[in-house]
Image (cartoon, rainbow over all chains, first blue to last red; front, side, top):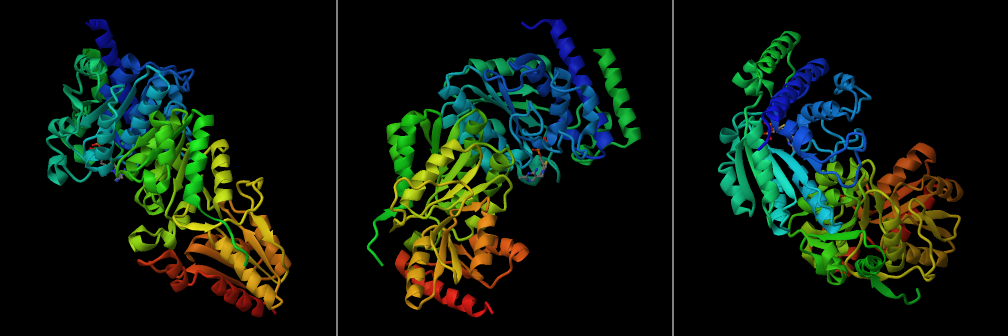
Length: 280
Length: 316
Ligand SMILES: Cc1ncc(C[n+]2csc(CCOP(=O)(O)OP(=O)(O)O)c2C)c(N)n1
């Protein structure tokens, strides 16, 4: 059982990361708040609880690796890396500025800590598979994690990679779907339905766990089930809310997929997030 | 024209790969259900732990290659040239080239000599679309001997590479087994002062034949094997233009954007001279034997010689 204090600490961290996301996207005047906020709790658990990583030694050979397949959620990953000590928190406001390492979509060459450059959806899981195969070849116990969007699951390559991971029995791989039910043009179910996701991944040979993607204990529990699963990769389908933590984004996720909050919207969002942080 | 030994560059690749597997445990090979055709089968049999068949899933193969490379492996990924360059172009661009990862796309069945399978299987645009991607190195070996050298250099060289190989047996034009291939350096294979033929792949042998034909007419033609299309040996190209005053390119690829395009870019900016491009004239191929197709689509020594005569006429 994980201590209550740790959960409270993770929740506070997630709130801090969400505030960074809002501030940096507002400062950049562009970026993707909705899918960054929906992934905030998952990313928090990974970087502040689960991943075996060293901020001061980002290329440490034994590290666990995280691949952000939905590369537009770059802001939440940058926020986590900064808070974890990869680079100064002050640097976050350079997001999307010319010359910054904080590219619009994650770029492994410009920022240590980024394991794979993405942005063209559908490519991350294949790369994660490759890393998991390399870990096995080199007899490293490290794990590989990969975060996908639910809309992203419309990409054919995702299913090619799904077959690969199952075929090669990559039990050192945990993938997570940020199941926030929205993509750009509308609800995923209306644009091109990917349901039933659990059954699809099961049919592709994966161990599937479903969890509340905004409950720390539930995310931790799902990740631990994945670690215990032998002989197959695990897919965690995390039920999330696009724009989570900011009321007006939750209410109209389609307006905040790829649009920056105005200064007034930013202040309202920060106020809400701070209030919530105090409550926990 | 003397009798030459015939070797398919894909066979030379398979042989080199199997040898390298013994020497370097860090080399991993991927294929997409074509291991017998691409000749990775030798490596697959000898080193089953380091060979992964990705099935008919080229995009996933390229992405998996990127992941393996990110974790420190030297990865060769093989399929037919059309699929490796075209089907997986975005994966090559983002997962392999943008990341500058150590992935070697060694693809076979390039060009029209893929033959009977027809247009869907003949990659005539791959050089153009691969060389347009930043960080990519593009190499088209001229024969079996050079292919082995290229594969060995590829293991030593860190970074993404596209290596273009052919299906049929083609003439071996490098007699010296100690021939040293250097990435980015062209090779003058025949001296001459009246014009230069710059060729790659199996067209180098035909360029040498064309030079022989022209010699009978008293025309002295220089022949350059430009195996590396990117980075381009611009210095050599410019020198050839200045010294011989006319250039013909010859490639088993579209005249748009490939070797001819690359050479034209350099000459246009640095040394404009009369120039002609021999290659596929913005057309798809069709089924036929490699020999028939080369003739039908104008990829012959006679055609190259005709182009040389025309550029020489335009010199003064
Ligand atoms: C190959 C590709 N096509 C289109 C896009 C443009 N795009 C960016 S985000 C997005 C929607 C993604 O939806 P989802 O995966 O559900 O992400 P989330 O809702 O979690 O942000 C699209 C289509 C892209 N980045 N890559």
